[in-house]
Amino acid sequence: MATAAERKKLFGHAENNYLNCTKGIKSWMFTVDHKRIGVMYLIGVTTALFLAGVFALVLRSQLWSYDNTLLTDKMYNQMFTLHGAVMVFAFIIPSIPAALGNFVLPMMLGAKDVAFPRLNLASFYLWIFGTGFLLFAILSGKGLDTGWTFYTPYSIRTDTGVIYATFGAFILGFSSIFTGLNFLVTVNTMRAPGQGWFKMPLFLWGLYSTSIIQVLATPVLGITLLLLIAEKTMHIGIFDPKYGGDPVLFQHFFWFYSHPAVYIMILPGMGVISELIAVYSQKKVFGYSFIAFSSVAIALLGFLVWGHHMFTSGQSVVVTLIFSAITFTVAIPSAVKVFNWLATMYKGSIALTTPMCYALSFIFLFGIGGLTGLFLGALSTDIHLHDTYFVVAHFHFVMVGGTLTALLGGVFHWWPKMFGRMYNDMLGRVSCLLVFLGFNLTFFPQFVMGARGMPRRYASYDPEFQIFHQWSTIGAFVLGVGILLGFGVLVYAAFKGPKISGNPFGAASLEWQSSSPPDFHNFIHKPILCDPYDFGALVYDEELDTYIHREFMEPSEQPEMEPEPQVH
Image 1 (cartoon, rainbow, N blue to C red):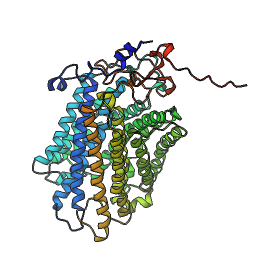
Image 2: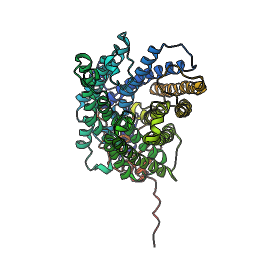
Image 3: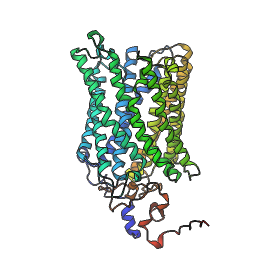
Image 4: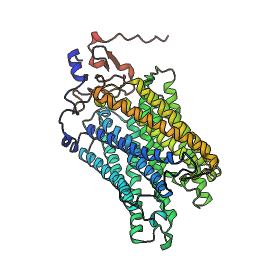
């Protein structure tokens, strides 16, 4: 129990928080506080998003007209390579685990920090160095024109900055491994006393499953990139057929990592959506254990389907049939999540806040991405659609439409917790609408183009596709405006938004039992362990304008609970 004055100290707008405990750039550069590292990651991946977004808008401007000469063919190849490499390796893969995960995971466990705080800081600096090498491929004067997959034998023979870029991706891989290892150990050893596996928020299940993939799959990519560098510099004969190598072997190695990496990108987003759907429906998650185990199932099945990227590479019919069958199987746990989210919302007290709008956008966009994946998983249709704009649209609906909307929803959800200030919810919803409309306007026409045979990665095209490219280009700029508006709303709120107390949204997980922003040690008091989706345990404190757990209220202050109906 706590008096009103004590509750104000525990849950109010904390002045002695992680933002203000020590000031100056040096205190941030050498911090081992997981909250500050999460904020720095968020700033970094947002910068990478904007950089990759500028590359995308330049590409779309080139494609406005079928005979446009804004870029030469060589510049166009370099631009789409850099867009893909920066977007995948520097933004999508680390965005939710490293940024939101770093900030939220220890607090959801009731812990002070992650298991290895110094390793956490090291992983951030590795991310900076790796991204720097990727960008140096631009500044070196040679550029990079292989596509983000670095396919051999072209990547071995081109004189562009392949070595810089692959070494950058290699370093980024180590950053990812360190983060995953840290999260695995933290979840296994630092849960609050009494917090069993099935009392954890579903976001933690998503992060845990992602960490398994990061630790097991990323070393394969690292070794593959080192072999590529060795092949390019010493001509050993691993991938280059000129020296007896096999270029298809590179595809096997690359996709053995990169298809599980798809789930590194999307599983944390699914965890975020589980939190948002529950909180803004104020309902206990329907089928908690099914959603939790489906995350693990996706992580494990993701290692078995890499061959569906190679249906046209000449592999045997038997192998392609097996990969096709497993591809359809991996859709089951994803569908379990979607149907359980919908069941959670059924008869819920739904609040259409900005985070909830992004969650609903995620369900729609990810649903379209998943359904269009069925056409690419089937052998007969994939032969026609392979390397067309249909693949581009499908990939973006799953990865960008899924990861980006989940990230934005999660950032809007936890932003008041990070900075202790509230944003303009109306402008936030407008940003969501622009992102949703712009995204669909960008990529829906690409499904049509791909089905009609428009190949991807072409700087010019037949005039019959021009109208589709123009709609797509308009949509890309609308999407860019929506993202800029959303981050503008958040940045303004961080400095000028109204101050709030601990839990403005009525969430029940442990991170909301701290002040806003959180204390340097996360919790001033010992957090009360409870079901993360037991919203009935919360009471609204009018003086603080926040929700708190019933056990912090005096009995006389608690509202009377309605008696449960008697069963005769």
